[in-house]
Length: 101
Image 1 (cartoon, rainbow, N blue to C red):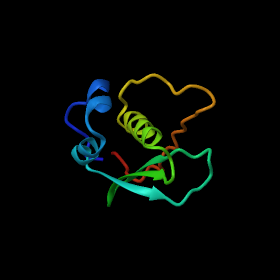
Image 2: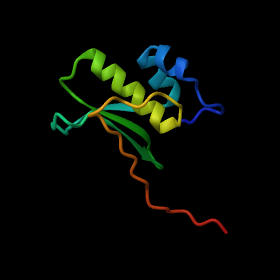
Image 3: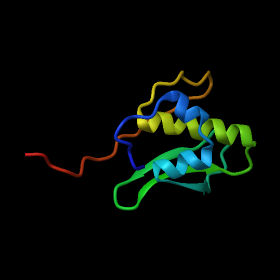
């Protein structure tokens, strides 16, 4: 994701048309091969090829739009209310590949 110089506001993330938002952030949106009904999507940070938002197919437009915006907010650290139970988001830290001296 091309991280903007300033973090977008929650209003901007929620009000901007999703295709415009994805384009501005430099995110690639793909269909996920995961078919488990409990999987709602993921943001995958790929240092060499850019960021990927992967979403399952066959979901309603409302569900797709809402979950995409929520995942982008989580990835950018934009404060938004937590999802209601039983929905859970999990952040999996990447291995540290750089050494700072």
